[in-house]
Length: 483
Figure 1: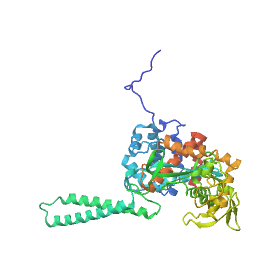
Figure 2: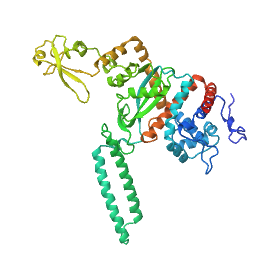
Figure 3: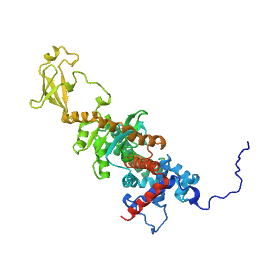
Figure 4: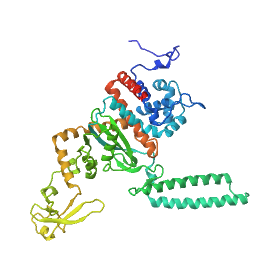
């Protein structure tokens, strides 16, 4: 059988125009159409074709570069610059423009607020295209490493000591500078001392920023490189990270809202994330679903009071633990007397209330009753007798646990993994996101919105196909332009 051999020296011509570099069904055309459909005035960027002065790269082109680059795991400014020279899809997308890495990095850094709003417009586009129903919303979180080292996290005492040391060094440098002014002979270079003084002042400012972060009483350690991140535990170990929250719609698994928080736990995030998604949707969803990590009765009650059906298992339900004969559910609560009656007919009266948690504790009237009971050791092993904790909204907890156990709720909960965990898998594996590139909350929020938008565009391409999606977005673009 004959071979096909290439010849680098054979004379050939590229297509007569850049437009012919990619086929009509190439996905890059969908990304181009998406950015063209964005309302840049709403993003906070004014596009003025009559602008005078030194020329700069058009914001639309730079947005296209970032969105398309992130969609294929190319996030570094240097790698994006390289793609503009060697990748035909990038060359077509940029129309032959080749910004250098400094220009790309500066544009991304200066337009963090605009990038944060991209996901909102993407979600609204999905709503207009009937891809988001807003009836059932799923919430989940994942840990993504920050652009900071774990060893840079310290407590308040460490920073206070460093601040005192830096102040002492600055004072010493000022004295040396004054001495150098009086007698330059035999003294160190004034220029080198001036540089060291500038570095010391910069370090002092960073330490002050770290100390300011301790105003949040819940934080025990603050990272000097990125003061907004926190030490979080995951399957990859303990690292300086962000907890990325995502709200996904049931209809096509598209992301409605995404946010990076520095809270290490999901416990207090459920109501906050659902309410922000509902604000975008314009009306409350019918069902909100999450795993046991969000099972905080106070949080669940906030949504329950709005008429939203909450589907979230308690820790006991998630672990499929069977109730013992002496669990709290087998004790009868008497609302009139505010007491509990144990299975043996003994009374547990109110004892005290936990100030922080708000739990009310009930204890057996006489501990001898428990010590002499035939079930002592099974019901309790405490020498003070049986003790029961009751939540402020205990009735809500009982009702929501029963609501989760219903067949209709179980059918919805079974979809949770396939809907809300799918975007995280795509972002981490396909988009190669093991850590953020930008620092501080505004930069991380910008990247979070950008990554979520990339997932939504990929899903829309899968649902409609490139050609159909471009046609639909072109119509949406005309609607936006007419507003």
